[in-house]
Image (tube, rainbow, N blue to C red; front, top):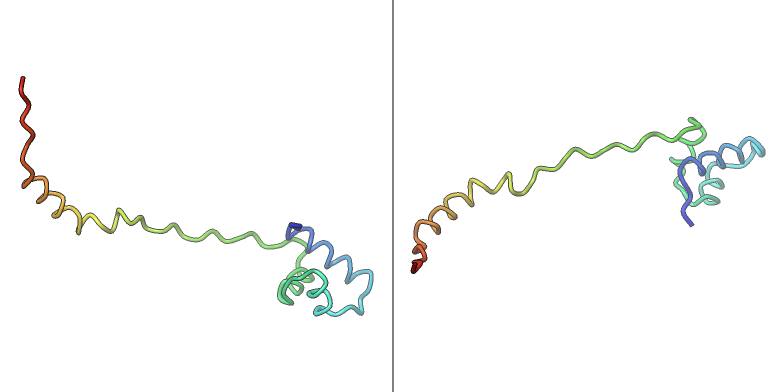
Length: 85
């Protein structure tokens, strides 16, 4: 079952508030998250926003220098179709 990070953060903070003696390791095992996530949940009530990865360069932007001469040479060598009218 999927649980949102907000839900997990809320539960971790609630469990620590109700039982201050519970360890971070026990909370990590209970909610199946890392101890770093437990530490972040205890430090901040709201999880940090996900970072967007930088946009990747398109393969087509890299290849024109290689493809352009090959395409031009193949077009020049190809005979034009003859159309009977």
